[in-house]
Image (cartoon, rainbow over all chains, first blue to last red; front, side, top):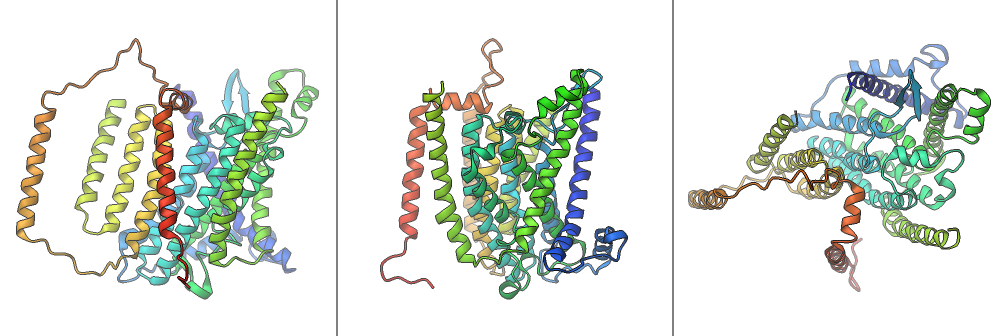
Length: 353
Length: 169
């Protein structure tokens, strides 16, 4: 790899990392504002204009709280838990294509950190690792409630991973590629996967809620049954990291949903618009790409808002209902979706070729 | 570069694998086993087999090890450590030493087969080629393995099924 490429990649990865953290930070603010709006309150408005500095104030408070480590806990693993949760949450944004290709000085610059031909499997692998942070933290606290919370989180994640993987398989059958860049490129214009995979999208959406431990599936943290869940014994910034990792997971889940089902950086009439803007193909391409990045982030923000909207609208499930939904409804539905997709592809090959 | 990476990964793999056996706490053992799977996936990537690397992480580190951790975390960790007698230690050492001797004897004359640059295809580990090979040359073993999994699944469901008149809660 040339040194110019290497420098560009380094900068790009750092920028994506920074954007991920920034969006996660302001998701906490957005969550409180959305909650306030839905409950007809005002929400945070003291720190800075419109309360915009509230996340900073929260982080400052978290840092200055007392650091507490239970006496009979496993010290190393107790500290490792939140770190692992945070590390794994930050890993998956590496393969997501936030934009198409920019042409700068004759050089093609892709707005994606790492292009691997197994991008989707990479995301799936990282998601499946997400449970370790919670499990290690919950076990190391040496508290029965923490352990039960961790076990709940683990069983919930494992159960919903299956349905999620099966719903992804239908997408793979259609696109014939595991590379996220390829999947995004195939949805050019308004040819989004959601039109072909509505059932798959609903399954994926429900599983994404369960994987990120969001309401209505936030059963690992349950005040009435489990005191606080896996982070009962945590305080200070270690608790902050657990909560923060959840918001990063929401961002990543939104980005993956936007990429897989809602056309990533594609928007209707993008090629026609490019032709109107400029005759020079380089300028037209760059303008469309930058617009595409804006569209991609608009989609991501919509999904983040959707996560919050659902949280303040729906009541939560009971744990046995959650398991029943995952194993007895979503998995058969996902298999049905695979069969339907296969049949659809066969029919299309038979009649339209 | 690749050589150094290989030696680094290999030593890390051996160290983690050793720690699995040596660790006193079973939870530590499982965590080191997960690290071992990660380093093995690193080896797969060095061999340009990205699909295997990803699947290794998803299946072993992501699913099976979580279940291991699950079970071990439920075990009582304050249990008295089992004392091993001197006899079993001595027999263990002797058996291990003998196994090592046999291994050395077997591998002494073995030569490592090198690849032929003329016919070597560096893309063989990519998911597309792997799929083509699996569904053409190795179709029968592949399908047999899937039947085996199906049988195992049916067996697991049978074992876990509620019997008539039985009530759990």
